[in-house]
Length: 435
Image (cartoon, rainbow, N blue to C red):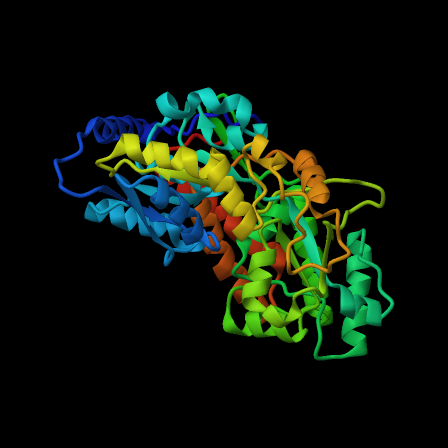
């Protein structure tokens, strides 16, 4: 569904949306106070090496300096921004994932930037534009998209005579082969703390966790497609051929670094994180399209993807908007991204900048020259997604329910139903109309 068409307003939320719009207008109308020094914008982001990109802005904009705070991660951005709004200390600009943007709009955190950004539509990948535009209003500047990849240790696969799995059946077979060869090694982990990954895998299988038509919402988190994904991973966990390490933990980092994990289901942005978490494995990885449910299919799903919001708390709306647009659309910023991160820009011209497609991410084997071609193909084939207004509730409940299922040997299917029920109850409480 084209996200420009759906309304975020639930019955009980209409007033709060209107209030949020007024707050946004008030923030945008604020005049900059007189000062002897430059305007200083506060920017929250978790992107790798983002300080190097911000440095480019600061060098060329002496009158508007940006201070970046990288201590806030994607997983807690909604909670941290909500707390900051309550305390009256919102940053001027913030990174957000696409799935969290509806929440930031509903809660009066992301401001309307249509007047400054509306003319950029032809320059932005359609999928990214739709994910940041609601009722024909722009609420964020798209940064990049998240075409999903299977990253795997090419050296480990080669030593066992394995090919990169093209189907989920082949993926399961590879998991069995790797674990049988060395019981301390695993193809992958099923992390209970990574609902975003499970949502992307479910989308590839055909699930629509949220959908909306004529003002009514549907929630399909425990749909047949999602249940298929849950049953698949429960089977591998029960066999013991995948582990259940939580991602982004020291244990996961060590497993990635020492070869305990032979692959990682991630996205285009992963190579710098591989280098950060497992530097000694540089040059030993390869990347391919996500395995398919049916041989010969070519269905992809996006994992993550970020945008930049100007918050309703800024006192420097004009400058904050200029920075947000520059950060994701200027040749200077995108060139810096290319040099310092594995971004697949939402800006279409940025994808043609010299050096992007000619540069193989350092984490990958030198012989892999098709990385960006695979990213482009995957991006084009990614299934459309509608994110609901309470993704944080879904992700939090997912972590609890699946963590309990793993610990107790419970049913992944039942865990999905728990998530479904929690999300529906939360939306009804907030006043959304569900069919």
